[in-house]
Length: 260
Length: 307
Image (tube, rainbow over all chains, first blue to last red; front, top):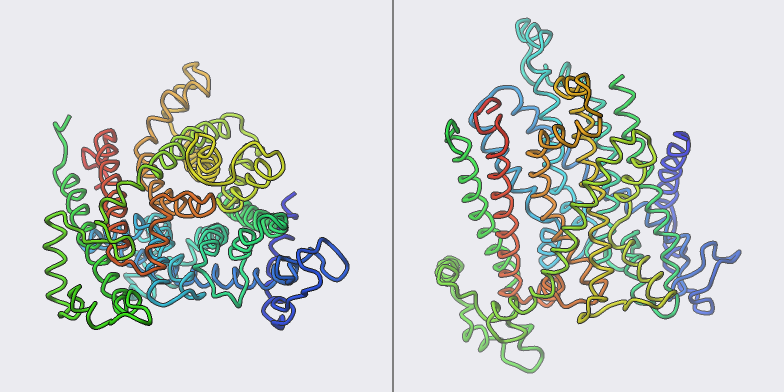
């Protein structure tokens, strides 16, 4: 059963790679004679209300969604993780300032951040990355803070400190390898949440401009063709749920394998 | 209630509240400042005189003087007139909030009760089926769930309206879609918390004494994790707001989320600023109250064991 999740994740990354190399005429050209067409040999999943091929839009969309997920995780992992590693070392008063600031970030809804940014700069893929990334910083901060606190107090870190290693050396040599699997599991689950979040932002038209498809913005296209053909959202929706489900299951598996 | 409590923890909650309010005010003002650059041009269109509108609305004064003017006005409860509707923003928001409040309330109730139920069932039944159900609920974005509901109940079965407001029928699908997608997240927190605590000594002790596992988890396990669950509930309010914007957009309900979306797209800065400030302050206030309750009911926090 676990193999299936793995294959779905591998398929997602393959489609991301294909989507990165896909020329734009495949997913943006409108086949005016076959608008809202159903499944056929020419159009694997049919076409949308403008005659664009849904299959290729999904593949290109998986590339954009993947970029948004990976970049937002990288940003939040770097900022949140670094702060957490620093703060978990000693009990200083800075800890209150940082954790207070992190709490404020967590409370602020991501759609507000996205709306404000879009109003100022206009919709682009960077807006989605930043607003999802800001939303993820507290998650990584808390997870890494809680897991690294005990490692800092362990005996081998004390002996490393006695032998003259600086705190940054200890961080990279001892702390990060010890909590590596926790970070990996959290990244996997955050990737799933990034896909779900992008669906909401993309639907509101906040994640990309109109020339590029994402899975969220393809949901927006449904609204425009309600009474012609609402069912073309089904392939995207199924792909979204399958991918998210597999990523969450896989993260549980990483956690279970390492806690044994 | 407060005997033996550590003042430090209470002060932390208060300071956090004050700081959050300050940050929200700052963000709101900076947002308004950034956005209001060409608002006069937008109102004037091609025929009107933009410069005259700028003078009329005080947009040509310096940034600092406008900030003090704004803080002063806000302190007096005057949030300005909407640039689109040309009536005080408070009136519009008070009107629209009546549409959003039922959605938020019922979605919240559904998410908490369903999440609690599923979380407990998944731990007690101890098989992966219920866990998979929870993960499936998290995997369904609220957009896709809403669209699916519309496809099934409005377009195929034709028993529920696909949008608009008025009857209770209009509220059924938005509340369910939002509630179910939030319930998955809450159920997962309940599950993880119960799984962690079911290996602790006091749970084993009660089981050895002869209570059933279900009884022990419900009567002693759940209260033990209620502090952390409460802070999750506080966070859920923030997630709920994001969901409300999406759901109101899908079901064409003219609530507060839809109003915010329209206001920002049309650059109605005072309206958008007021909604952003009000909702952010509301969420922060709820979180502080929830922190406070968690503080009262959790002995380890109250007595400062893990401060």
